Length: 407
Image (tube, rainbow, N blue to C red; front, side, top):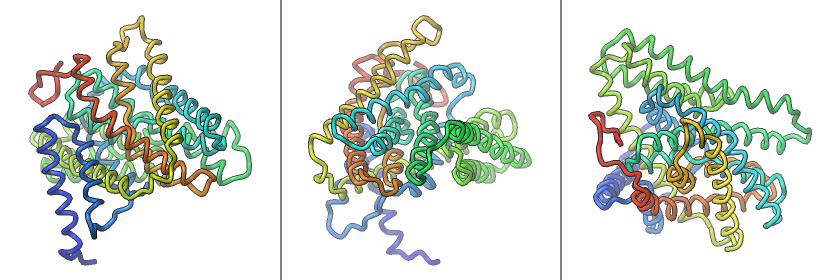
């Protein structure tokens, strides 16, 4: 198959736009993801622009693996393990609380069916790792807050994946799903993702230990990121948890000798670039698809109620669960809780799940409502986040030698 200049030209144009947006947003202190989405809307309004529809496969198979893997490479296991009680509670019970608030509200206030309301509640409950990580990397917040926000957004995808798959199973089958089946599905989705990620990265590190060629090491890490993700998804486990585990293993155990000292910096730089490319394309495409989606078909009341419920669900997820740790060494400061609430952005992950819905009575309404919530999340929450961070005094002023904010 031959790629012509005509086929490559749009990709080159999008990359140039992404570079210009990156320079402008960093100069003026705007969120990069919001700038890209706005540019995408502008591009879609131009005549004769080819459309690239978003799909679950495009987001999951192309964009999500490098973003999750790169974020996990940056996580230090000691800090990640220390905060795990907080992040696990937010990821598991937090998603359940948020989904329940949204589903109940959509059913009682808008008369959606319980199935449609539950599907929307689940897919919109999880904060999106793509949007969250892109935004918080730009803002340079305090290390612990950044770790909490990024870890939760990465972990809660596994919960959403199993809940969503169970609901889709109910749609596909007239039989009632047993509690044992749900528990088994849940255990495999989460545990299977971790096992596949660990096994894949372990095999990759064994190969990497036999070379000091940084190009080979980068290639092997790419196989670990995509291979673990795609294999887990193929086996109906969580691809995000698989890629997260692979990144944690390579980013912590790999530095002990399997990855050469010279190759480490090359590998980190390469993954910064891969993440930049993935972020650029995904947010440009979100903007382009926002502009071409007939959002006018959704009435104002439905949009307003959905946004209000999503925010209320996030309140129910963050503040009560954070209070559990008030008298412990893991206490979450109130200003961190405010950021966890308002910084719980929705984006590509919610859109991917909505677009993957089979025919259900509210399918069109769910897709349109998801686009509205994502637009609000990016353009209202995303644009106001830097100001809130500065107002709460959480922004870092000093970076360490590796470029991480040291508080």
